[in-house]
Length: 627
Image 1: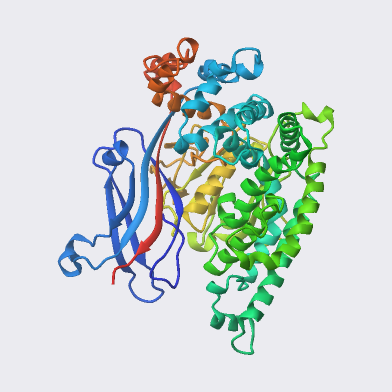
Image 2: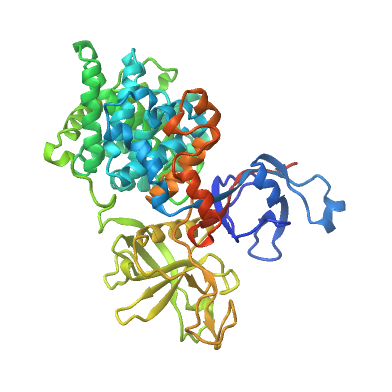
């Protein structure tokens, strides 16, 4: 398995996260080997080098930086130091997640200041967690807090608690929520968890068009490449003025479409987000009531919605699942200019003309009218009926909403007489909370589907089972109780993990999930994985309920989130004790009530411990080839 193919460059830039699942037990002498190959259509593929890491070393010390690519041992004398270098981050993560009820004491401790607001705020677990959380771990803590409180139906009160504390510390409204405090990061992660379908509905059409058109756009005279502009004209090289004029027209069109989509999306915005923003505006108006601070009530919301949500998604669509791959340099420059424009709109145009980029001035004529429309949009966004404020949707996604879609190759198990490679057919897939549906193309009306409620396992297939890698299987049960397996081939390891996560998230609440399954297929009268001769033989490999990607896009799992927060609290135990966090908050030597004791007792009872080991490789940020 590996990242996607990079073409026509000596300096490939992948910037992908690959996740490999390891078996239980000690790493021993196991080694992670990262290899780079130049794939050729004709002839032999060229080996470019490799880097190896012993897993027992990664377990104690995460690895990050540039590493010299090494040749095969037999070729070491010939190649010497002529190979390139690879920059990557490697870490080994071991998660032990106990049954949810063991985390109730910790969750009660965290929710106490929300449910019992009369206690002194300085001594609460939330206040202490906010104080001792460092910049490096703040985003992770914020994400896990949001997921725990979403599970408790208390996400809006959590944000209100944190933002109110932040407001109390703020004297200059111009700096409000500018820092990466726990309050700011929590609102940011809340928007990502709750508002991802909304973000896709608003931005995906125009982002897809930008990627497909690949227009050359540049306003900075110092970066214009006039010879490249021949690609947009048959009249030869254009002048700087013509390139600026063409770029300005394109940017105005893209930006106009983005702003139109945003300001027209009031009713599409999740109710939970609107309620949170309504409460935030109320608190800001209470803190800064004077007329001279009237803009703050708008800026407090636009600063989050535009500067921390819409603009970052336009800048790097892949990080928000808007695109499967990062943009090429030309498209990335267009996205950067649009993100800058959205930031100016999010700042309500207050800093227009004051920056270090005067070449952005031609866009001001478009930005200023947009600011007026955005103010009206923000007013409409917080107009939520009081009856709706207490409603917490049972699911973050509507059951009919498309969670993920795209082309894959599929085949069903059993009875195939063709070669495995020919048995896979290209189909377009849609996944919602209700079903996995597929057809020959997005426009094709005849469709097949697998109801999500009937899924019993979603697992990878061994690499050697078929004549191509990146295959997963969905085991589903029909109305008569019979199990049927569908095999699906993905284009890359990254895509495989994304689909595994999405399918497992959608089916996470299913009952009667299979504890085991076969990572191979039944062929020629036996299973390719364990060689058992009966088709109905029990599985030889355990199944998994989730994929631990470690980001805001993980499933809502309060137990896993609580385990992560518990780990943070243990690591800062000394600082907790120094802060006076004795008694129920725990100390450097004791665990939060119930959690530590449960962990120790259940670790010895393997039936109660869910253990997953994941090797997370932030692989191939870039490859630097030596001359």
